[in-house]
Length: 143
Image (cartoon, rainbow, N blue to C red; front, side, top):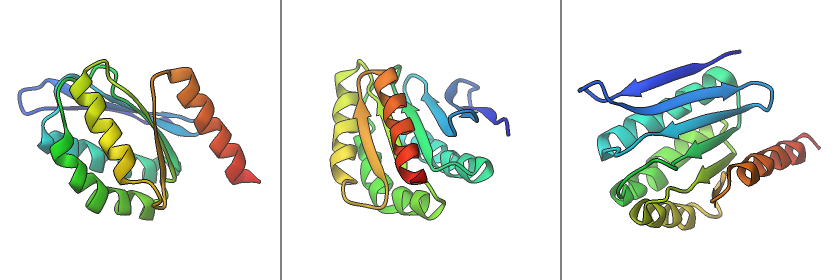
C-alpha cells in the first residue's frame, strides 16, 4: 500500500508529511519548521490514522527541521496520544533530533516520559542508525 500525505496550517504552510515505506514497513513522519501545539496534536493524531491504514507498528519521526519547543504538548502525548497509539498497534518509534536545542530538549523530555510503556520510543542523531534500529526491532518481533 502506498500512503503519502502532507498536512498544512490554516495559512497553507506545510507542517507535516507522512509517507509509508512499504518495503521496510514503517511510517516516515517529517515535521516541518515551527509546529504549534494545536498542529502537534492534529499531526500526531494523523500518525495514528496512517498507522492503522497501513497496518504498521513502527514510525520514524523526523524532527530535523523543527524549530522551537513543543514541551507543552509532551504531557498530552504521554497521557493521551501514546496510549491511543499503542492501542492502534504502534510499538516502536524512532525520533530524529532537530539541530534546535529547544526542540532537542523537548524530544529528550518526551523520551524520558514514555519509557516503560507499551511502545519503545528512542531519540537518534543519525537517520541510518534510526532506520537500522527500526529494522532490528521488526526482526525481533517476527521471531
